[in-house]
Image (tube, helix red, strand yellow):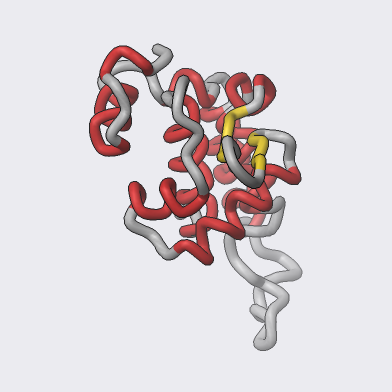
Length: 150
């Protein structure tokens, strides 16, 4: 299973916000820290805000914060939501597979995909920033070493 860049960045944004306690980073700050384009980060932030995982405040004193739902969110559930429930392979695409009517592989891949998600279900965003990841995130974001939440 390979995650899209969008999902990868969304997980990194959630992790970055999970270690922040004092300064509220902006979307630009997060994009710079993660070394990704601002426009791509802005789309990710909008989706995470729509899902209720982060809160974005504009203006002076604004920035991004992780909601309590975001902190406790299951990594498997977040990835399911961002990746969608589509098949691993496109058997019905522009050039449909001639085996699609009697193929065992399609079902096996679907079960493997669900097993992948299920293995991530018990893991929360908070778990992702336990040591050694949290202190490293603080280091690259310029935060104080004691500010992260294990």
